[in-house]
Image (cartoon, rainbow, N blue to C red; front, side):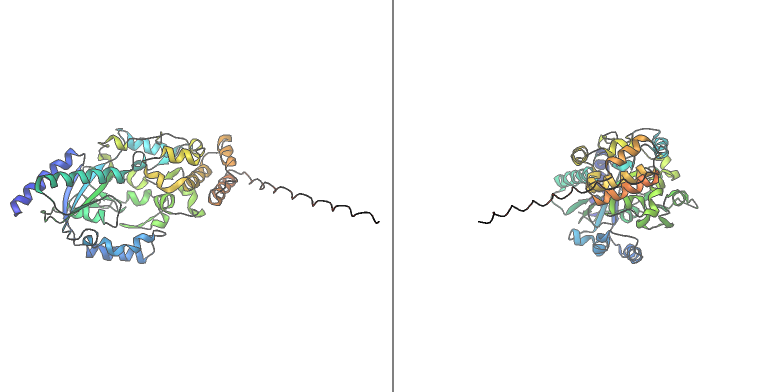
Length: 378
């Protein structure tokens, strides 16, 4: 294809992307060596915590051609996911202030975004393929070692905010990013200027001070990391600050002035399921494993498993206002088969001034049978 033809097909792609529900679209080159240096410094500081895959696949992030041979461009898209409620920001703060309710990060209220975005990106690529013939492409959405935020910045979808997420003037940060690697030399877009200025609202809002400097996040302190990525016990020093956040955290986004302009989700896939935007902690803590797996079928939350779900809820119940219902819910799982859950439940009970009940005594061993009487002497 010549340059004019590539320009034309890029504009058609842009229009098709809008038809598929994508709110933003841009094309970036894939020269990522400078970004790779920043990632290396972040990893050297140990900020990735238990996310070993970040270090293990670090080299791949700067080499798109290792994931798709021949890659020369990244087509970047964004899709809105803010709740379909003009007062969603106020509602989110209200939930966080209500210690009896569970707060789930707004992105996880509906269907698993990985699948939704990747499927629509694949449809976008297939539509172009039907028009021009076969070409190399591969779609991603937070599903492989891809530098989504950096590529989206280079594609002109926004700028990197001080909380490290992508920000745009027309959509804030409440957008999922999708990436389409391709071997087509499409014309690239121009990055936009940054518009954070002196604002540090996101840094000040972080409950655990995980944003240790502008554009620098210590994941080990981040509530999203602690409730989703961390597999073991949540450090006691950070439990109180978690409040009622049982899956992820949005505080840095809720505090960002640009999210006043965030558009609500254009797809029904991201609407709240299982009343997650209004559920009580006690209600969710009563779910057994089968309930968890059934209700979260097709949800990103299912990935953490029932054990870590209960761990997170136990911490939130420990931070909840004391009530008979809260204490009873905790007592019901005080001797949970999972040592991880039981430990967090005991911590929560202690927070409410409830001494841990003594472990149920082991059943007494049966008395040894009396020896059979010896035969009488002849």
